Amino acid sequence: MSKTSDAVLEIAVEYLGPAAITLLERQTKFHLNGLNFPDIGPEHCTELAKWVGLASAMFIEQDLAQELADKIGRLG
Image (cartoon, rainbow, N blue to C red):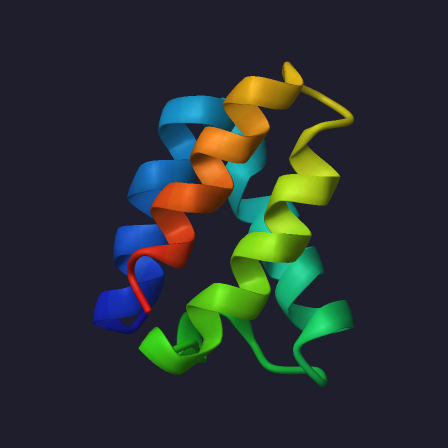
């Protein structure tokens, strides 16, 4: 995994627990042109943050989903 994907996963696990990796892999694959999650770089964080925020809001409170998205976005 890249330095960026490690950082994103570490943040996401705080909010989503073990489901984090599945959500991240899915959002990356479907919304970042088939990119594999381990291959993301800082240049992908803004777009990934948007999709993670939307998807995670289905599972956690809206304000926590936005906080998660903001933290991921700042990695870019």
